[in-house]
Image (tube, rainbow, N blue to C red; front, side, top):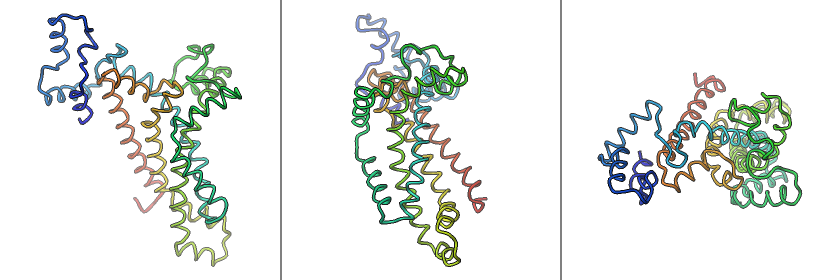
Length: 314
């Protein structure tokens, strides 16, 4: 609702985007009424919500396509990027946080804290530009901006919309290698941002558990430090850690705008940004609803996993 109201009070005329600046007053008025802009704001919002409940997000002024079709096209690209970034964040950040907590004050702990600090402090667009300059421009180790090279563009049949998955399903290893060379750098940057948050929270959760009485009791009984840390303390942080990972994944879905712009990644972040600059509020609202739905779904999934990981929640 807030996004809808902001879109209606912005000093951008969506009618001119449709009819053009050379349209007559009669043409302008007809388009104005056809778009429902002559109605009161509350009635416009209720009409829009009714259309959304029927699965109709309107038509994009920028692309000329139905917004729902545009979202089906661009969202898999962001989903693929965020999933790979989250996997990097989890598989690196969680062990790093656990080891840092188990060896508090040691060199691993110091390195983990510096890594987290740098991950929070460095602007991701600057890291992206430096990464492109070094690994693409100078070393030539990775593919450039975009999802694929020109040679493979459009050659892989679209099944899921995620190019790595689709190229595997098609058995096209050349396209898969090319797509991986393009996605690895932006995914690694998002993964670095994610692992900075995940490692920090994991370390905090583990420090709390390692100072508990049951851990002291386990050590007194003679259990190995590895079993105490991973078999007892780590199991007890799984519930809050699930929430951290889910929120991190959601933040990558909505927060990869700068990354997508730097790497010319045709995802939902770039789609919404271009739509906003063009005053295309149907596209902005459609993207807002989709991202909001993802956050709700991720929180619901976290609640379901609570019951699986913690029998007390039943």
